Image 1: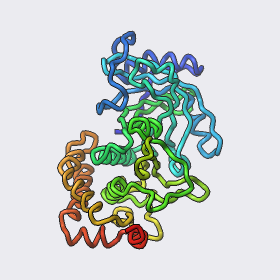
Image 2: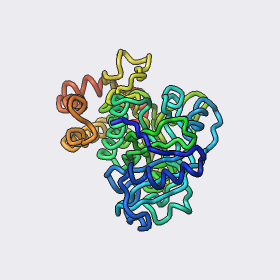
Image 3: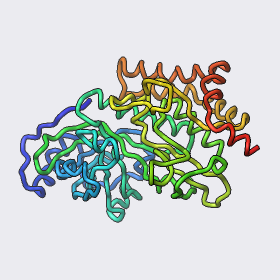
Length: 373
């Protein structure tokens, strides 16, 4: 899945490299047709197909800044095939992003910055800054981790509209400085949090912490059961990292009309047991030795709330399992392991004994819940 491309000729000058990427490389990598047609009406996150694209930029320079607190954007060119099969070209600026992955990964994740005025009439209409998730290092194992994280996002989309949308992209990277040999991998972009808020009629809020009683209990229960499904303990719906706004790997939003509680919208699932990245370790305060072991750290909810949430998950069981079983990006043993892992979650939900022991029995904050009633 992760492979290198060796173009026959790339000049050293940045502008020349851009031109080559828009001619020879684009046709080779994308199998493109005419570049004169306008893009289709389908927008970026309305299509589940894999987009084919080429990024030409001083990637090695961007990577060299990954350990710096202040990182500048480098200008580049984004060429892709639109829904009508035509080449489209957009200016894009890139820089490395993230926290742990930016420091750990040989190929750190990138932030893409498009020009809003230039993307009008294209599949990227309305887009500005997009997070790109890609393999941390070369190799099929790291490629598989990206696919699994993408499927985690898709799983949450099945469970609720209050989620980030994603789009798979088979992206070819061309370093205009020629310090890195071009390569191609499968990754995905994530809907910007401001766009999520606009789409759902919500407002992002910035607060140091969230109190138990301020949360939308129903949507919090869905989010935290989802975290159990993928075995992710690397989050908090109440607190953020030290000296940072709430919350950890969760965006908190409220309805525009202020008629409702705070809604947690989770992201970043690379530390989950489903993905099982080599660097993932369970929190020290949980009695588990590996992230593959599910341990519910969700908040206690009123019986009618948690019961409804559990029923909702059970109603989505077939659809969720089918997402993994029919994935074209997972193969062989990888697909079997993923399907089995998801099925094991539903085995807990379909047994009242296991539900009471593994979920109800592990919930946190019963004293807060009692105080609210």
